Length: 114
Length: 118
Image (cartoon, rainbow over all chains, first blue to last red; front, side, top):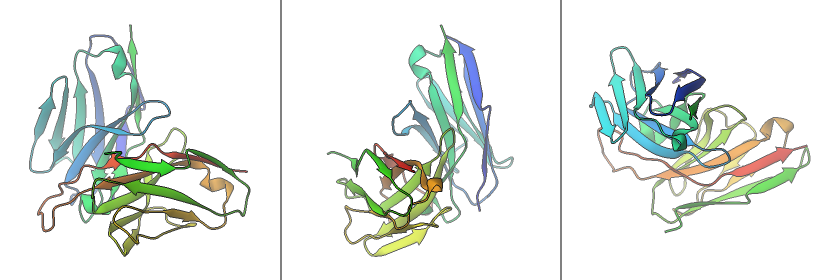
């Protein structure tokens, strides 16, 4: 089955700096890659996603890049703000497509230092 | 729309007890999912359903059962609770276009049920 590795497990950056979180996946059949933000005690919230027919997607301060050949994708957050502090999860669609659910990474705890 | 709702929010069970976690969505989504999240970990898929009357196993189905009698509801059943089932359980739903050549889903999550088995 699909395996998703996520790094780093903890990332501390100064407010205003950029943060990058990286994920790799194992199954070349995966075609959908969402990123979720989870605050303590809350549900995961989708922040951005990318499909396998696209190499990059941007939404204001957040961007995601996908390298299908290398089977890795990354989340980039620019001009970080205190409210960006949370746990971020990457995920990849299971073999068979997103309909069969998602395989998640173990998460990155992003800490924004004032 | 309320989105995806789950009940109860919290529950403590004794070993061997049974319970049903409820999940309802009002977005007319055809796909529904159950995940569990252990402390400090990502979510793991337990079961999923592609429509009423159809369910399938995910990564960690042992110890659980599901049913999908309506589009809106997708309950998760624990028959003989064990300490290893202590976790936060999230239900999610999505809508996939029939015949789409590429996944079109965005999964929307419920608020979760925090379950402790002692």
